[in-house]
Amino acid sequence: MELLEAIKSRMSVRGFKPDPVPKEILSELLSVATRSPSGVNCQPWEIYIVMGEALEKLREAYVGQYRLGIAPQPVAYAGPTAKGVSPSLKGVYRERQVQLAIDMFRLLGIKKGDEKKLREYYEKMYRFYDAPAVIIITADESLLLTSVSLDIGLLTQTIALAAQEYGLGTCVMRAIVDYPAQARDVVKIPYSKRPIIGLAIGYPDWDDPVNKLRTERESLDKILTVVGKV
Ligand SMILES: Cc1cc2nc3c(=O)[nH]c(=O)nc-3n(C[C@H](O)[C@H](O)[C@H](O)COP(=O)(O)O)c2cc1C
Image (cartoon, rainbow, N blue to C red):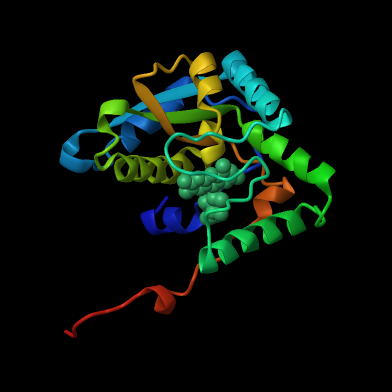
């Protein structure tokens, strides 16, 4: 796939076929993606692939937390509340978040106030959209005051772009690190490593209506300032 085409066609995939992704393919993908740059080449990432029984356990643990009404506790950055509404976004940022929810729920036929369907949606999110594998990217606690978030962001996008070359779809997901205690317990992530972000990964089910969502972007003239002339 051409690079520009890969950048344009990447989207969050939230409906997957049940087919497993061979570990060898995921390893090859990750070994390509870790060509990503990082500050002073410190490569602050350590990566976990979770599949099969372990992934089922992780889903159960997360859905259990969600059903108990436990607020997500992503350790890397402030995240939304258990209902998925971030109190921290304001102005245009909040408007874009709301637009995403409107578009998503319209597509899925979830009407305003339909708590039952909304809860079902969030449970599905905490099942990581039933992807056959998830990737958890962690960073060493000693690195947290460095460029680690940028470095791991670059790696994450590189995984998402390169995955397409293998016919795989991804969804970058804060939800995968929303319950770090459960992630540590099931995945055996040591306390010296902090889960930063996750990706659901698998073969996209293009018949799933959720995958019809195409998100908008602000036009460039609203966000770009050009200084100087050539
Ligand atoms: C840091 C980060 C965290 C995200 N967390 C979630 C998540 O928990 N659940 C989810 O469904 N999508 C999540 N997303 C996907 C975004 O909603 C998505 O990237 C955005 O709406 C733009 O849509 P697109 O990826 O289809 O272009 C996350 C994306 C990023 C970059």
